[in-house]
Amino acid sequence: MPIELRITSGARSGARETFTKSVITIGRHPMNDLRLDAEKDLDVSSRHAEIRLVGDTATIRDVGSSNGTKVNGQPLVGERALFEGDVIALGGAQGASLEFHVIDEAAAAAPTPAAEPQPARPRRDTTARIAEAVEQQTGNLRRILYLFGAAVVIIGLGLMYIAQQNSAADRATIEKLLAELQEQNAAIAQLRGSAGANGLSNEVGRIQRERDSLLSVLRAGGNRADVKQRIEELSRLQTAAGAVSKVDYERIAEQNTRAVAFIVVERGGEIEGGTGFGVTRDGIIVINRHIVQNAGEPDPTRIAVQFHGTSRWLPARVLHVSNSDDLAFLKIDAPGSFPTVLGISPSGGVRPGAPIAIVGYPLGNETAGMGGSIDTITARASLTAGIVSKSVPDVLQVDAYVAHGSSGSPVFNERGLVVGVVYGGPTEAAGRIVYAVPSDRLIAQLPGEAAGVVKQ
Image 1 (cartoon, rainbow, N blue to C red):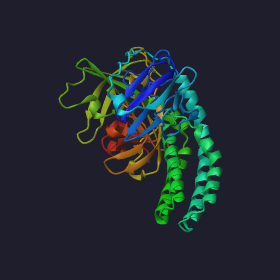
Image 2 (spheres, rainbow, N blue to C red):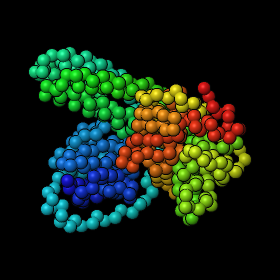
Image 3 (spheres, rainbow, N blue to C red):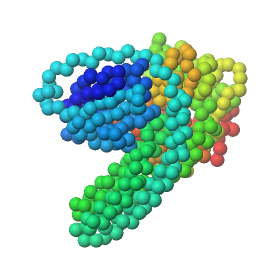
Image 4 (spheres, rainbow, N blue to C red):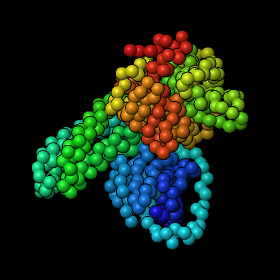
């Protein structure tokens, strides 16, 4: 289904672009499909939102922007459908607005003038703004999800009552339930995508969509046994989201973020960025094997490390590379006492539904230094909340957000202890399904001098 996006405000106001691809990324980074002005549209994030086209359906979601997204004046939470003429607002007063239009196949086949390329320019430092937004949302998330949890329980009881009635469900009762939900919907709508709240916002949106779908099924006189099973699943999702809302992410960040380092590896004239974390005071750092060793590629000619909140690049060398897992260890070649994570916990007790936090540098230099030159940046790590979706001996799978540059990021449990090391995810998941090496496998390969970092 071809679509046209018309830019109605911002630096590129008046421009129009046509798309037919299934995923359309929007933001200020030059790698986006719809690129906004990197210097003037300052409230638009580097990677702000994405539109997905499946058949004749278009949906939009915010992908962790700093200043949020609105559709027709309503804050965007999770994912929602787009219709002809919808107005999409990206960020605030210094953002941009788009109009969404569906075009027929004949129009899509007509040649479209190529959009004038936007040069990649350093973006201003928005670290303080992100920190302020995360701080505000940490308190709001708990209050909103407590309300939301109570609403889901009430809804569940109401839906089970309706499901037990005959197939001609009482429409008046359903409409009453809908009316009672409006206050909860308004509270949920206050959530904005950010580095700290992205995973939780997605989960709330997922719960909301399932609830709305259930109400539609009941209106249509759906199968009662199927409805009952879905109500039980909805309750499970709500319980998991409630667990996330109770985690003290500020404490996790305070205990660990200083030990999370931005890693730069140079080989063959190319520079690659990643994430690592300190496990000993003398400078042993855990990273991914693929950051320093790839089949068919030369060995690194230079490795440099910069801890969160610092601007000093520290030289490092490869200490050990795992033969069985995507793990490796660096050693800093400079004197000093370096920060370490709070501890590493065995992953055997991690269960699906458990809340987690990932701290790292998604998009590499773009987020590490907020777009500054790699020679002058001060590293700034990002924290993303999420939920464990699968835990097996070889893989820890979580629902959260990562991107290029997140490889090697530590996954923390609610106690602030490492339970996994991020190494990738399926391409089609667009960074929302994350694979990590379980901490049990990391513990088994830690150098002897790092044994003290293991906590039960």
